[in-house]
Image (cartoon, rainbow, N blue to C red):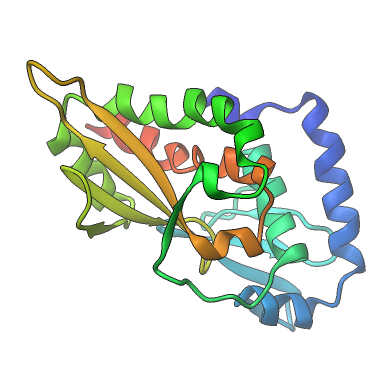
Length: 209
């Protein structure tokens, strides 16, 4: 999980995103992102996978359900950008590959290396482990590949993990799709990272197996 905690140059985009966030009307951001906003506490409630994140306005500080501050800087940046740039586009249930996203070809090799290959390496030889972990992170089973699940990213945005188990002649493989509405919330550079975000929870579940 170390990669999700990297700071370094990530502080620059995080500070910029928080600054933009502080300038926005919180009521409008809540409406456009389909988030609950508590006017009394000035806190957004944003659904992420099987948990809720709490975003303070105008600071942009994010807290977990247990009250601890979120310490995954890549996720912090994405949550703030989600609120700042959100469009009220509901899920389409039409799934697209990363290459079908504008500019996706530029980041595809990084996406393949950090997301798709990670999924194959972790679960390619064990579909039952994949099913168990997906169930535990609140994913919904869908009919694709040998096993596939739809995972909530933030509110109405979804990631699809697909696994082919392989056999003695064919190597195991995987793919990652997105509900097509994600193009209205994030650019290709962000989406390249989003495909890997579920591993924050996946690693927690694997540690418990």
